[in-house]
Length: 299
Image 1 (cartoon, rainbow, N blue to C red):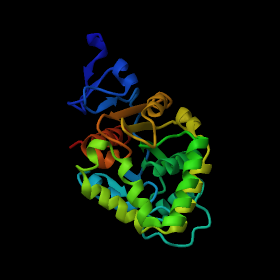
Image 2: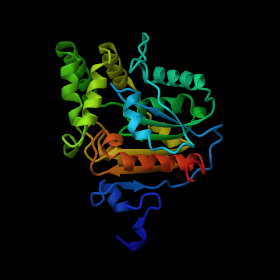
Image 3: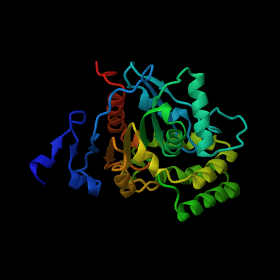
């Protein structure tokens, strides 16, 4: 590796960037950031709004600790997606497109007609991509945390059906007890008992109809890599080396798709980067926010 290919990052003093290391998905045990290839001009949003979309069998509560240190200059919105958390109205359609329509109505109700920075974890990332595809004028920037623009493989679809059958036979308590733990990197499963308990408790409180509906909706979602290729806004991908749901290699490949893009590869994370390595993940999201909403939160 030549000296000119290795440089410190101003926003991430403990991270290094190297094209060679980036391809392998690791960096001496430290979080690895691929910086934005281009920094976009500030987006014409009426105010700097960041919208956080939670994942499958989660709720807005998962973002509480992660967002607490965010600068006061940002307005943070954290809805419960259809069927999740306290959003218990009858849900005839759990598709990512239906969730995106709900998000638009939620933003309208909150008085946010302009573009916002969208941060989506896992299924929340699928919803964010549907939002960007169907309503591009509502998106000022996009952060995908442990998420992918690819459609499910046949094996993944079959596994989702198996999960539905398991819930029907054994109930949600047993399902969540076996589902949550593998989402964390092995080194974090005993280190973060409160985070595991939080996800298990939220999952157990989720209606079984939501579990089945959301699993089938994720299985049916289309490939949206074209959204990343055509994005006119900055895109951040955050990936964990030990993610059993979204392979790191897929994230590495997708990081090259957006014209304006960056990536954070986390050595010690699984599928829950915002809980497993929250500081590094938060810095990456704030770096994206700083690029999208120029000058906000930098004082």
